[in-house]
Amino acid sequence: MWYTVLVSDNDSIFIYRTTINLNYLMQTITQNQFVEMLLTRKGANIIGLVTETEPKARKTGNPFKEIKKFVHRTVVTGAKYKEAVLKQGATSFDADPLPYGKYLVENKIILHEGELQLRTVRRNAPKPVKVQFVADGEEVAKEVVDKYLTKSKPSAKQERVGVTGKKQVKVRNYKLSNIKEIRMNGQVYKLAS
Image (tube, helix red, strand yellow):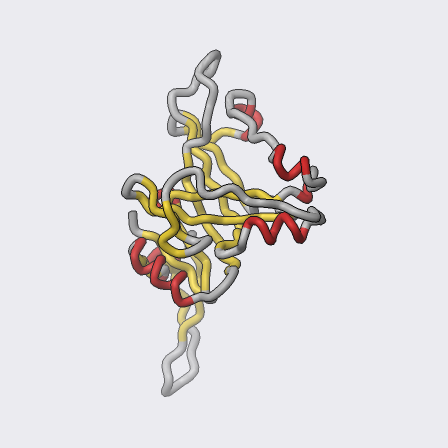
């Protein structure tokens, strides 16, 4: 995006208009730097993400070779899944262990097959700020690709303890390689691949 900014020097007041690309102002950080930033933050943290993923799509009848999904979303990392479910009204709940990988940073960073993933937990989450789909290199409306995408199912385990519908807690692990931008500590960072 391009913005017009106002600039002045210290000796006199004048206005100079220039157009800049915000990508040049955004600090680029490595995956290791991001992990270090999370290590310094205790407990649960609210962060903004821009992600690029390839959603699971059905093969049968799907005319697209590649579908990509770009999402601008606010997430919570560092939250404890069990506690989040209990806060939604369950009287008891035992969270299963990680189905794969191991925590490098408890409830925040997972290492799986040599790749780092960000663990997020959402409950009563607002819809993403912005969702875009690109199919075979062309931006398309969600309705165009939606019928070819697999749908997520509600958690049967949460339903058994009375947590249903919008009250369900959603866990999502994002590969750090799929995260393009992070909003954290009042700053916007570009995450290097």
